[in-house]
Image (cartoon, rainbow, N blue to C red; front, top):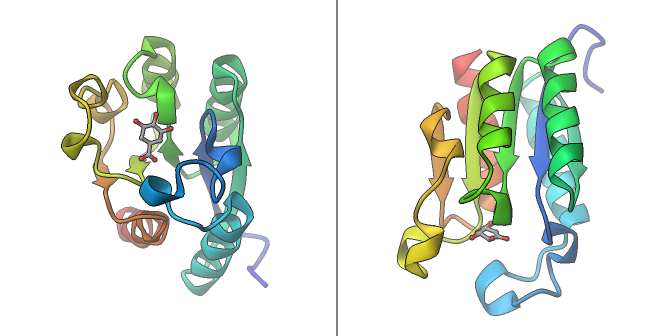
Length: 148
Ligand code: DHK
């Protein structure tokens, strides 16, 4: 149990990550998004943090959640998935949030197709974790705890 005064970290997941475990498992692994949620909740509670873990396939919903984090959160961990390379609107929402942001990619996007290499989120992130599989979420929470 985390104390009610815990800082809340919003862990937000973008499009198609609801299919984790089924989608291209040779790249993304066999853990499901529920497994990742559990991993995050366990890690956060060990660090004295609370976690708000969410996934959406919709850019505007992700932006609404970033704005919610701005109002009530202490940090944002974001796997922007397919919006990484396209969303100036998500980057602007992160800038407006004025919170530490850690970007996570399950795969090493730099070892993949060139169109995956550019990230608007990286321009505003404190740290970027890519290629550590779902363990990257644990690393992100541990680093967030150090930042706060
Ligand atoms: C997930 C996606 O859905 C892709 O669009 C990104 C990222 C990579 C990941 O590795 O978690 O290019």
